[in-house]
Amino acid sequence: MTLAFPNPSRSFDQTRRAVCFIGHDGMFQVRFFVEVEVLGTFGDAGSKETAEMAYLSAFDALRSSIQDAASKAYARERRNSYTLTASGFR
Image 1 (cartoon, rainbow, N blue to C red):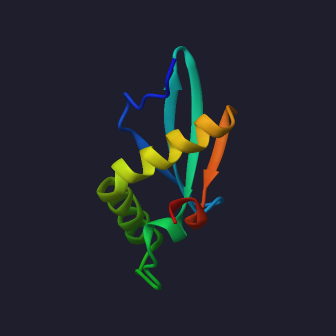
Image 2: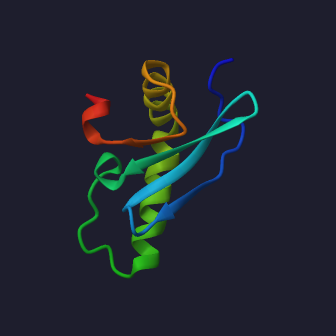
């Protein structure tokens, strides 16, 4: 099977400073974390909630390229969790 992203849900993980989303390979779930550096810098974007909304909006705008990078990472090595960094988008 190939990796698919049928669920558009995503969430911000403050501890990891990353946006988390889920891919599916058949019945297997694969977790992905996109570091905030991939999504751009917001400096002092105000409150934690404001920064979180900005990162989630940036993720939404870049969703297609993020999912492409996630699929490429999964094709190289099949694991159940990945952290996508800025170097994976060059």
